[in-house]
Length: 275
Image 1 (tube, rainbow, N blue to C red):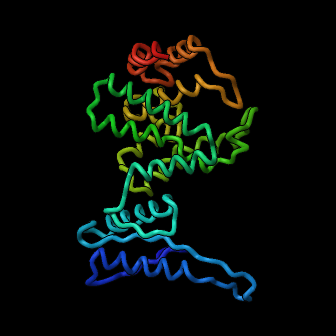
Image 2: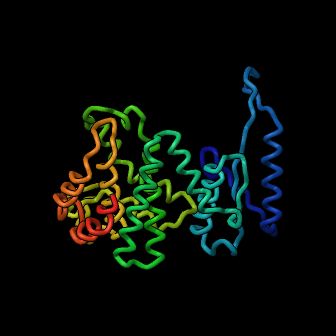
Image 3: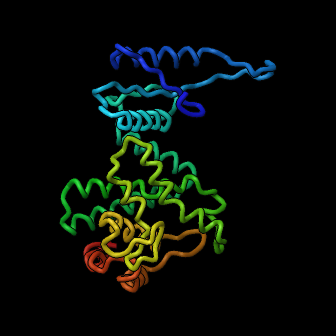
């Protein structure tokens, strides 16, 4: 027994194909049965999600194998549950889309917001002459930067008035929650700091860790600026949207405090005219 509802089966002298077949047999066997409570009053079906890794193909150290095992199990659960996954079956783009779909069911604002932030952040990254690998990481991180909001009650997300301290703490926890969701997934681990620190401020007054200046990863600074720009530009339950001219003024006013001044200069020239 590995966890509360998780079990590990060791299969010596078994290849991946054989392990997958066994996993499917277990899954189908459970799917076809009805389970009763101790008193026999309640009968229900049980589903199982599983993941298969092989040694040494999928990792030489126990920590590597367990991390990959957790990531695959996460993928199996987030893509619909009741399935068995192996590394060769992972479709990162599909998993990314499934995560967004789950969040979208909870908070309709997030999908459109994330897509707009991705567009702004990608454009800014290109204007900063970053290489293709960095741009792709920023693109992926932008799309998923707010997935941790799935853990925030809707009444808080859509509250028209001022948040109290407890509600504000829930909002401030979403970068850590987003990073944890990604950490447990098979998605690139390089995007985690970009997501975790996108609410840090250039002057060190942001969250979750109070990083300042270039302590904040460049990708996180880019996403933070794009995120704030979009948030100012659309109407939310707690405030109306700003006019384009007002957004420009606010972005410039926050240069050097909330935002990296160099990024603001490039952003204003490259993106704001298009808007």
